[in-house]
Image (cartoon, rainbow, N blue to C red):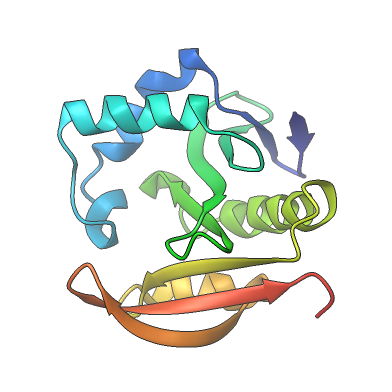
Length: 163
C-alpha cells in the first residue's frame, strides 16, 4: 500500500525503515506521553512485531513527498480490549504544528474505515496531552471514556464508520 496525501507519502512499514523508527522511539519529546524511551531490545521486538502483524493491523511509515524525509509512524492495530482497532501516531517534533498529522490521520482513517472495512476506530491518549486530544477531535473523533491506564488519566476517543 502506498497512499499520497497533499504533502506526504504513506506506505507500509518495511525492514529498511528500522533506523527511522528507532530514532522516533528514542526521541524524548515524542515519548513524553508514551511511557518514556524504551530500551533497544524493546524497540527491536516492537519493530519486528509491526512487520509481522496480521491484517488488519497496519503500520505506516510517513514521509514528506518532496524530500522523502521521515516524519512519523501511524498505525491501526488491535486495541487493549481485543475487540476494537486503535489509531495511533507518533510524529517527530520538528514536524509538529504544521498540519501533517491532521492530513495523514484523515487519510489513514479513511483507509481503516473504507479499505480495511473496520466498523469504527478508537484512539487513546493521556488527557494531559492537550495537542493530541485536540487533533483527535479535529479529525472527527469523539471522547467516549476517561480512564486510568499506565499510571495516567487517559481519554478514549471513537469514530464510527457511519457517524
